[in-house]
Image 1: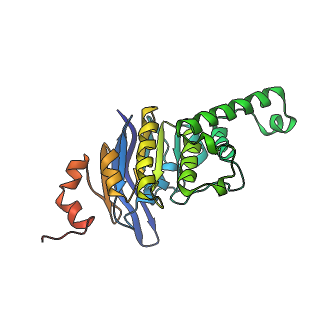
Image 2: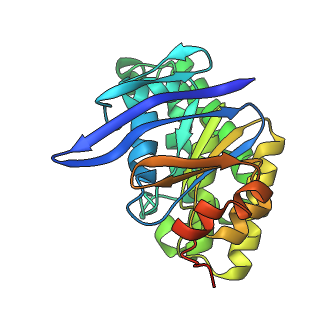
Image 3: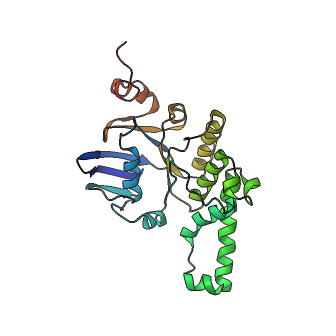
Length: 254
């Protein structure tokens, strides 16, 4: 069953058609990847899905609900979380505090209750801390929970960002180039983390340039080129697709 349905999505910037009538679906409990050369429209597509940009046309259905053009915080409350190409963490906060920020999307305490530190607000803050620690433990970074994020190795920072995203209890996690800046060992570890997240029942939509990672973990792959979808299928189908080989991998008849 489809968790995400994208239909004829389009967005232009001036005269540039960044996303041009893209349609695809992402199934529940599966890893769906979107690949393509630089400038293919992958990140713009993510921004349209997550609500950071409004489309010129087309629709986005998430878990049966039309979320087209919905504000990002409303999309997040419905169960969609994302990470970014460039890590966006508060460097002077601890890893745990950063992850707690992700959990606050599920908070019911308003600003007055928090300011007055009511017993109910304090109890909820404890629950947020507990749930944030569960996300940290799931990703195997509990030893770093109390350390300032800016002092952590890059790969650990990426894991903190993932923990912050899953702390919001998403149904769908959008990962934008999560292997960017990672070495080979860290990328292998990332693949293991993504598998662990999927095992928790979280579906994943991935944009990534590392083809080894994509082919290793994906159930389905959609390929973009100049804003258009040129192919979609299983990893083996994409690897043997001549148009993908010619356009995306840049190989010729030789």
